[in-house]
Length: 111
Image (cartoon, rainbow, N blue to C red; front, side, top):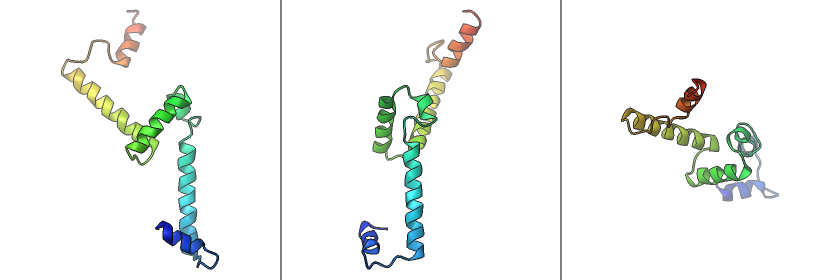
């Protein structure tokens, strides 16, 4: 709905249909869920980011990218970077031991 339509409904003499009120309730519920998701102290963000500043940086970038949510933004960025790393590795251009899993494996072997 447009902002003008909502204002008309919410005026003292505006007609508030059950359908309109249900749409408003859904919109508020979705917005509350987004707000909860976009808190730096909420899982998984409190595990992924070390500081609120790191979270805010990613949150701002996700908004600039017009991502549906910070979760979708992070998933997309992580998947894209993972594909780039694996492509570089397949071409033999990724430095030996450059992948985190390889570092962990090397440490467990005592290297």
